[in-house]
Image (cartoon, rainbow, N blue to C red; front, side, top):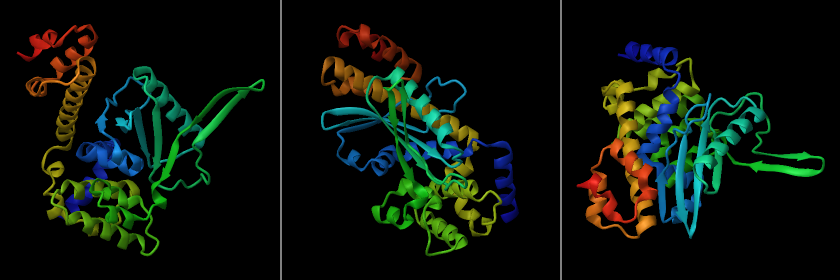
Amino acid sequence: MVLKWRWCIQMSYETRPQTYDETIKILEKKDYRGIAEFILPSVKDAEEVSLEHTQLSVPDMREMDFLTRVNMNSESFILHIEFETAYKSNTEMMKRMLRYYTYIKWHNDLPIYQVLVVLKKPENIKNIQGSFESTVQDLDILKYNYKVVKAYEIDKSEILKEGKVVLYPLRVFMKHDEIDEEKHIEECLEEVEKLEDKDYYFLTVECIKKLYKESKYEKYVKEEILMQSSLYREPYEKGIKEGELKGRREEKIETTIRLLTKKFGTMPEEVKEAISKLDLVTLELMIDEIFEYKSLDDIKKYIQ
């Protein structure tokens, strides 16, 4: 059984370089509010936190990791989080974050709070920067900054104290000065093994593989626990595809209800229930036409 698991690790890196990005997406779907509150603690007091569409058309760039709309104390803004394990240079990262900012702003005119979470300590970068200024002929052209969170400087025990289960797999990347690497990996696996949802065990293993690519620690992985995860039992690609479709549909339901409420006021519960049963294509059609509606009667063709 160990040999089988070892082979799976090798194959995942040879054929599935995007696996880690999928890991972040799964954690987001499990508890996106928990992630938002960890990165920005004041979100705990928010009246509304809702997932936003992250598949914006950004040429030559991967999909954004995490995008939510936050309504808090009469202020609305977009929270954008990127998780990075291979930090190459300040210049490259700033350009990437600025391109994301530009595309988010193009599609949504709300203020944007950007956060970069660096999971793995860079080998050649001593000072991670999160801001720059551009001046031409003594004229201030641009001042740009985003918050930088260094996960590898966070004490992993703090995550357990706060009970942020959605972050348990990411504890693999966090500070563990008091114990060596092997003991650290063993402890991280033991904590997620206690959880009822075995997907967290599977996702912790994925994080281990990202941090320790030579797979030195497979001896600590219990395949009988790993196999209890739905992510292990089902074909991974199929699970991701279905999860993405379900997640997109849920996002569209929330967006449709939010926009209609903003336009017409409090929505009748029966209307909300009817919208929640619509398919993805119908929801997208409703959103496209939402600014043409004069009253709620205009949406009856979709919900009857």
